[in-house]
Length: 214
Image (tube, rainbow, N blue to C red; front, side, top):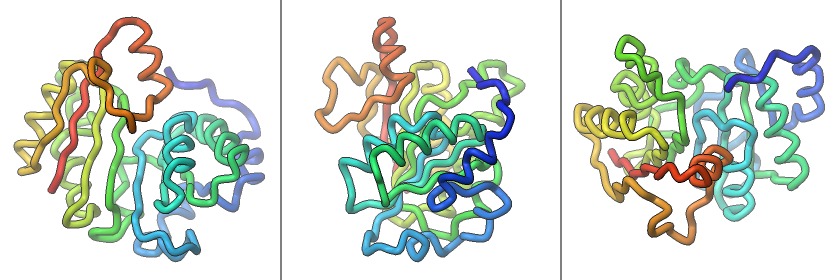
């Protein structure tokens, strides 16, 4: 569910300007992300639709040797995520208010080592299939910006979306592994649950997950 637009959100985001950017600025950073972080980390992981930052903040805290970027179109949601990042004092995270439809504009070819797609909008109506983040149009963009050994980690509660996505991965000539339709039945110890994941799991909804490689 989308948050209501709140006044002065962008003004509040200015407090976090050292690690939060907006679309007109972030589009200038393709190919330069490792320099922007200013550390020796070699790996760059990106979360599409980072929400309120529960997942990326936990992941970055556990993996200080990796740099993380969270993309989210809703400024108010980014503000919530920024507060979590600041509270944890994480220097290996950058957030951006950004429309994922334009993702190819902000990363150079082969720049990303891993993409996370967690509980994206399933767009259940057939006429909206092209809006799904696992539609082949998006997959072709991801392939361009992923490293040669890059990965996509995909989780969703929506079985129809998951099955659709598996078909799209095959169409895009991507290799799929670690497929499960009930992640929590034998949950890996390194799995980090998102806010939605906890909510769906508590309601008894199984979680689908897979890893996709070029």
